[in-house]
Length: 93
Image (spheres, rainbow, N blue to C red):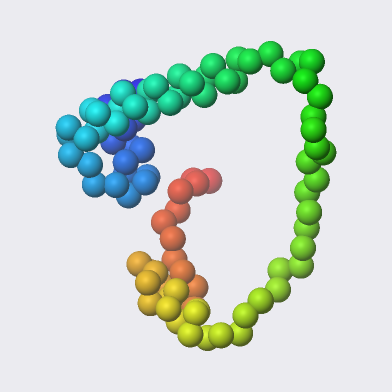
């Protein structure tokens, strides 16, 4: 992982890292990604699944009517308008 990749990752994660921290974490992240790559190369063709993955859909319903919870969340949101939390766009069209 290159330093500019680390800077981008830190920005996406909203982490304020010093140059020394970036260099130290760069080697850690590189090691972690190496382990993930090794796991991805494992031959699992003869392994049977122990469970079946099932998508479960539930109705989207409000589970609490306690307005104080909503108010506390909205107060902590960096940007909010009309009872909606505004977030930065991360996927471009």
